Length: 143
Image 1: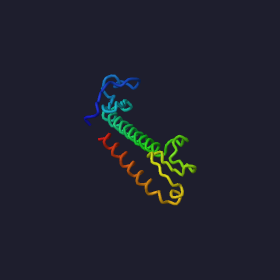
Image 2 (image 1 turned 135 degrees about the vertical axis):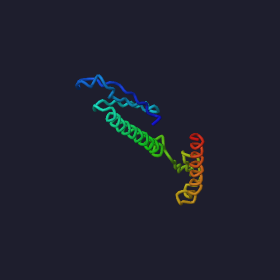
Image 3 (image 1 turned 180 degrees about the horizontal axis):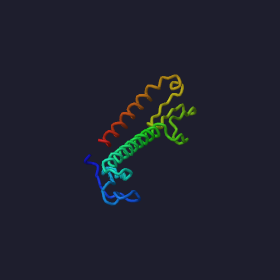
Image 4 (image 1 turned 90 degrees about the vertical axis):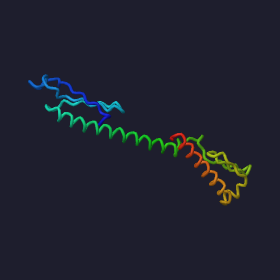
């Protein structure tokens, strides 16, 4: 509640005798986000404040949902990539009997061993090491 500034003012517009004489309109400002909600629908200040609080809560909830959706979208994009040809993962060079994983810049010679699954462990170990290193970097940057 300390994050919300409450301003009271007189309602404007048609509405009878009590419109310009009582401070029944309410303006709520959520200080951390700058979201402002004004309410002057009801004749009572308390009713306007209650309605404004509901609207503010809905807007804050929607804002949090949008931030979480964007975070998930960014994470998904970073995992999937754009699908461009320049984002190739692995190259098989049959003339040199070489397999290169471009994500970790790791190459192995012996195409027949790779296709037979014998060299796969080396690539998996390098990928796990690279993944752990990236997670540590991310943790250091966030912390």
